Image (tube, rainbow, N blue to C red):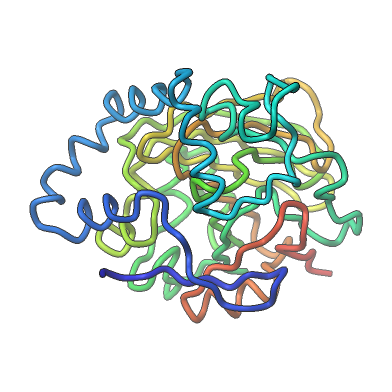
Length: 305
C-alpha cells in the first residue's frame, strides 16, 4: 500500500488524507529500488517538459471528466474553458487549459487587513517564523537555508534567519499564484536544475529536491512585509512556469503573478528576519509534520508589531 499523506484542512478544521494523482507511479519511482534507478530519466528536464507539453493536445481533454470525478473537484468554483457553449467538463480544449483554470469572481478573496499576510496560492503549507540551525525545513531530518535555494550572493544574507514558507500545489489544485501585498519587483532570475517530484513521498527519500529542482526567483519589495524572495519551483512533468504579470510594473495585493502548466509544483517564500511571522496554525501543524491546506487569500502570516 505504501505511505499515505495527511494534511490539516484549514477551512474544514480537520486532518484529511490526500488523494495522490499518479500515486502508484510516485511510490514506484521513490520507494522501489528499480524505480529509483529509472527516476533519473523521468526527472530529466527535456523528457519531463515533453510530457507536460502533451497535456496541451486536444486528446488530453478526454481525461478531464474522470479527473473531476475521481478528485471531487468542485466545478462550480471555476470559470469555464474557451468552449463556453459546452458544459464545464467539456469546455476545455486541452488538459492544460483545464489545469490553469481560474476561480469565478467572488469565489476567493484576499484578506484586506494589512497586518495579515494572505495565502499567495491555494496550497498545502509548511512554515517557520525563523529558520534557525535546528529547523528541519521542509521535511523532518533535513535542513537547508535560503542561500541554498536562492544561489545569489546579492540576496543570500538578506533572508538568513527570517521566516519561510513552502506551499505545495498538488496536480488537483488551482495552479495560479498571486502577489500577497502591494509592491514592486526589484530582481528576478532563474536557477537551472532537474524536475524531480515535489510530493512528500519523494521528499522523504530525497529531501534535498527543492534546492536542486529548476526554479524561478523574484525578489519583491512589498509595502507592508519588507523584501520577499518568491521562488517558483518546477517539478516532474511541469510543462512550463509562466510569468503572466509584467514585472516591470508595480503590483497590487491579489494580482496574479503567474501559473504552472501541468504537474505538481511548489512556491517557496522567504522573508526578512523580524518583519513577519508564520500563522500560529501553520507553525503548530508544521511542528507535527502536517501541512496545512489554505485557500487562496486566507491568512498564512502576520506582521510583527
